[in-house]
Length: 135
Image (cartoon, rainbow, N blue to C red; front, top):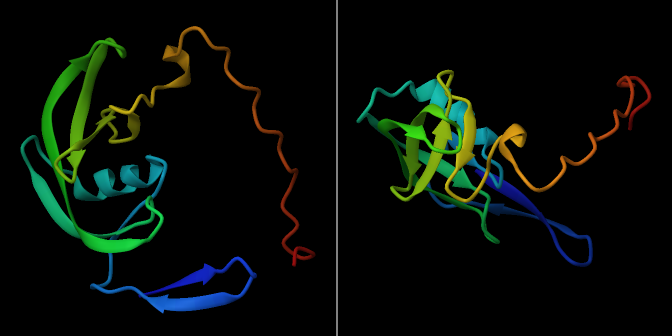
């Protein structure tokens, strides 16, 4: 697997990542984890270990990562039952019954649960896509 890097001078370089071909991508958001949860369909106590391309650090890495489903819990902020999953055995995420990530231990919460701060305005739409004239 190759990654492309852009240097400070704008020059592009292509580097080969060591390891096998990843089947999972872990990015700075939690949306990518949703795809893994839905594909894995783990029962409580189940686990799966796959090669992941982790792009959250300064340097990308390909390494085996274990996804484990912990016992469900009633989360105090959500006031309902959530599914609990751990990545690397230490990063916990909370998912709804459809395995969509809705929170994590780092403080990610649905907008409706946030108190004290108004929600930011929605990002304006760029309009319809122009696939014919877009470079």
